Image (cartoon, rainbow, N blue to C red; front, top):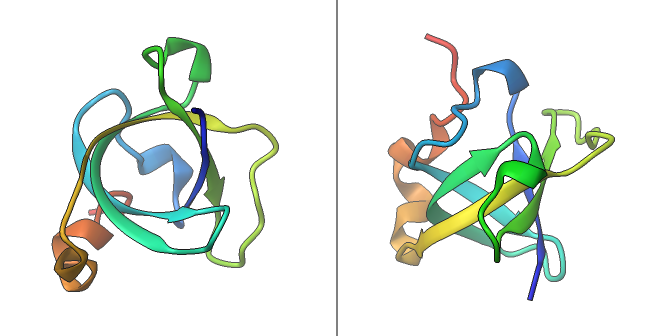
Length: 93
């Protein structure tokens, strides 16, 4: 079943597309943060079957007009919520 997730990042253009990355998503149904390994597809039509909706939000919480595609490869242990590696997906170098 397709679900809606949210992802907060400052720079949408620096988000890697189509490659496996570690990052945090927020389940839109219960606002729970989940550390995952997954792939982001800015064009949801390019996402594999069974993918979910990923709504990008900027740091002020403003939501994008259209969702992206999200393929979840693995939900990681909750202890990864504190791992900085899961917070750097969209960081500019």
